[in-house]
Length: 171
Image (cartoon, rainbow, N blue to C red):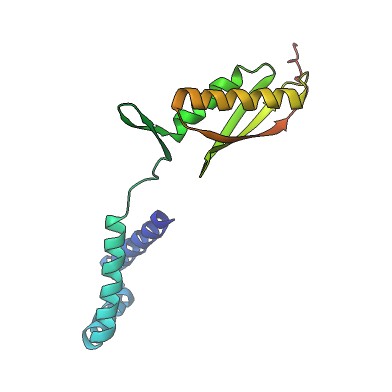
């Protein structure tokens, strides 16, 4: 969002400079009047300068990019940090090994008593949903706890689709 605002501001400034450079009087006159206003209204000018300074410092010192969600666990040698993407890959690989699971995606939510995992899945049409979902929950919980050492508090399964797989038509 901020990138769009800054981009629009730069386009507006460029258009203003282009208008002045091509001989238009009005943009130049407005610019001179604005500078005169700043010169004779010192308190308002100082307040505007302070707001712009704070906004610039905020943009300069804010963290860059989206920080990855990281989960910490301890080993005998120290701290181990596991990213959300690594845990989701473990979930995906473990879920694909469950008979009848066609595809999965997952989301993670840290809780006081461990990690809450939500698995959105698509099952093959021949499977019994409650039995397959229970097997999927157990596999995900065991795999995440085994490979990461992070306690899993709950595994929620949302079955997104349970449709017949239609064979491709051959012409």
